[in-house]
Image (cartoon, rainbow, N blue to C red; front, side, top):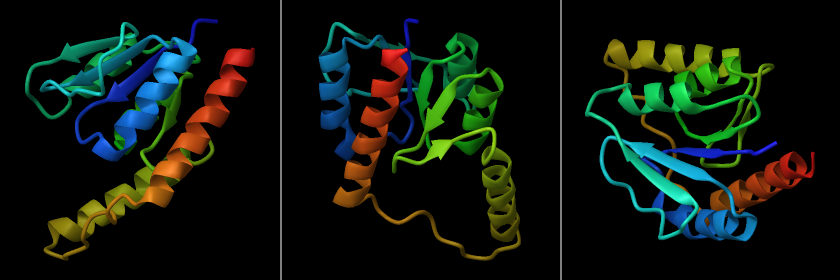
Length: 152
């Protein structure tokens, strides 16, 4: 199995970049950073940067087009995670949460509920700012996932 890593580069937190780059280098992990503008995770022979046309789902569409069974996608985009899971790939968010077949529909329902509230003028606010604990949770989950996946 040659696991590939895809990063939804749009809104990828700067705090996660150093740890992610270390993991990519340590594991020699083929990585694709896809976004509608140049996103720099760092310099590595294992990272390919893909800039897509501007548009709301262009990066998502490219990731879904490229991802294969067993690959890992890092994204906070719940509809993208749903599409990735449908292709039997894996998705993790910026805080270390794993999207799965068992939980993705609940995430989608909550997202739609919150969007509905915002559409009616309700001020719901966004997610809290990323904290060092979130970075550690992300690093731990990524390491756990990659160790298990690469052992197979």
